Image (cartoon, rainbow, N blue to C red; front, side, top):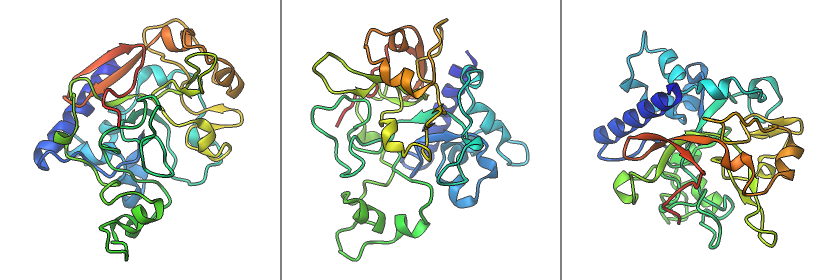
Length: 283
């Protein structure tokens, strides 16, 4: 219940932000909802949802402690996953995170949604909350490209259409009451049938192999930073070891079926979802 309350509060704050900004969602944002954002630099704070919406919480002295507590899932905190602060990463700005926002494209190389892929990641429009990554300066996002296409320097380098990296107007998104905004973060892989390709099965829709293992956002060679199964309302416990995750791709596995994913939706409500399906608004 505490986790659902957290998600409800975050969704409400995000909706209130949109009301104050002509229905524009906050962003551009990093997809991970980092904890302890109050200790980040101003540049890095700005790319995380807690910092963007903290004005809608009752904060003492504006430090963000309450907002950070709302961004913690008590159940996830109790699971034995790696702490990204304790391993070597590409940037010292990594923080633990329990939630992820729905701001993806299927193919990070082209910025396009790949036909035939499952609707875990690709959305229409892509990147509801825009996109922002650690390790890049403001100028990459804000500076217009010299090509005159309307792209920023960052979008030009990624080969993305103009506006891809910016947050979107919520009115452009269909099925707000069914489309997820923020959810428990967990990683799994699934093979829908013996002849099918491996596809993402959790709320983190990118393969851990794209995360540059040893320096990535969700795993090291020793295991995952984040849970590897839907972990609410279940007595099932899945291993966080790389081999356990990559060897269990059966869509009927308890990894996918036993637990629930606490989820907040774009209309502001929150619910526990059994059988995670991801977005209802694929690109």
